[in-house]
Amino acid sequence: MTSDIKSLSEFIQVNASTISITDASPELIKETQEILKIEVDGIVGPITKQAFTDFKEDNELEFPLLLGVTTAKELLELKGKEETASTTDENNGSQPKVNPDAGTRTGNSMKLPNGDVVYANQYIVEGIPLTWGEATKGCTRIPTISEYVQNAVRLAQVWGEVRQKFDSPIIITSGYRSPAVSRAVGGVRNSQHHYFRALDMQPMNGDVRKLWEVLKDSRFVGLGDAVFMGRNKGFFHGDIRPGTRVIFSY
Image (cartoon, rainbow, N blue to C red; front, side):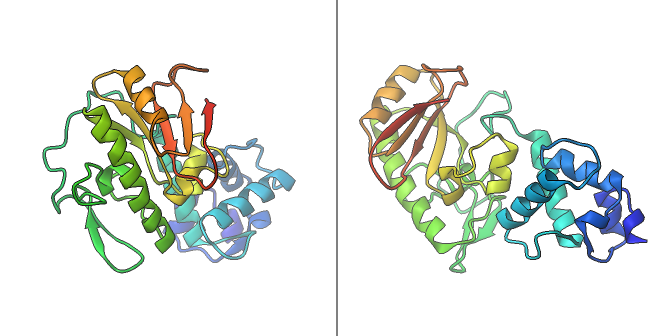
């Protein structure tokens, strides 16, 4: 019986029939709760229902309390991202290097909402050294709305001015990410990253003071300081949110 299945992997493997989350086995509920970062007790109470409903809404899945194969796959995908994610999202501690293929139509590809195919090493805007891969984790985070692609272009243009003034390579530690991915890396619920309006970055040469001064003089509307204020997470945040300038610390 579907209600006896004890893991999401098994649920997918047997191509189980869709069930209400309230009918899932305690073992499967515990795995789901762990992925959703809520109390793990195997019981489907109000918090579990809300977290599950939010997850399905974030991933544009219908039927808030139903668990099917598609939802199980999305949960396991999030689990994989959680296992490799850090606060700065892309920074794995390895020594960064300048990408020699930047600006070429090479690397992983993805299809944008308008049907265009772009590549990981391709610049979002020709002549501005920000690639689709840098902003979408190697083209694995695909923008699904045309507005997000338009935001990506504007974001690249604003970032390009910063890059030109700083005059040294800048590491992009995080760009576009869906609400589910953002939650996995500790992002806020209404993060500008969800809309392809934000970049987190580090100066490759370590000159954080100069980069911060350039950012404060830029057209970025939202600026997050995680170097000089609060906990030293070693990166800066810049976004093009609507409205007036706001500077915050992490």
